[in-house]
Structure formats: C-alpha cells, structure tokens
Amino acid sequence: MKIAIGNDHVAVEMKKEIIAFLEEKGHEVINYGTDSSENSDYPIYGEKVANAVVNKEAECGILICGTGVGISIAANKVKGIRAVVCSEPYSAKLSKQHNDTNILAFGARVIGIELAKMIVEEWVDAEFLGERHQTRVDMLTDIENKH
Image (cartoon, rainbow, N blue to C red; front, top):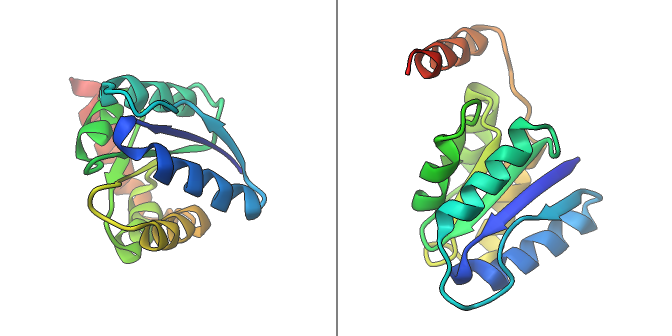
C-alpha cells in the first residue's frame, strides 16, 4: 500500500519510527512532513497529505502533530477527506470499517511509539465494510457537497 505521511516539528522522531514500521511491513511511504525540529505550522502538512490522498498519489494518509487534532482539522478541510484522530487501536479499526476513513491522525505528545504502532497497524489492516455503512458515508459526502 502507498501511504502519505505528514507531521509538524513536534512529531519528527515519531514519524521516522512510523515510516520504518510501515516499510518493514512492505508499505511504500511518501514523506510530506517536516524533518526539522524548528517550529512549523501543522496545517501545511495536513493539507499536503490530504491532497496526496484525494489526488490518488497515495491510497491513504497518516498525520502526526502534538495532539493529532489540529492537523486532522486541516486535512478535513479538503473535500473528500475523512480524517480521524485516534489514541487507541479499537477506534482506529472501526473508523476504517464503518466510516471509510482515509487519513489517520494521532498526537506525539499524547501516545507513545508502541501504542502508535498498534493504532497504525489496526487502521492500515482494516477494510471498509460497506453495506449499511456505505449509506452513512454517502450521507457524509452529501453534507460535504452542500457546503
């Protein structure tokens, strides 16, 4: 799977470990984040990863900032994105199965690296279940298209 990843200055080290983790599992990772610890603005990276996903440069995306919240809000401003912030694996898995999320976000200041790996693994390995969930995803798209 081709996965876009982005981060701000807070999450440089966690991003590097997540990239290595994903590559060990055979995924191709495209880095849209910063590799500098100098102060940077998370909306830049949220938008870059979101654009990569909607433009099909990547199948999905992962975003990391201090909490995961700001960077996911930025990504969700891009039409076609369903980004979710998760701090535990169960919600990550169900967000993909039920909501067809295409970007996962989490916070480097909120969770440790081993928990981050568990969350990433559950989310990447999960598949959208469709059926009754497709109706709800379509409803989300309808809301997005109204505004």
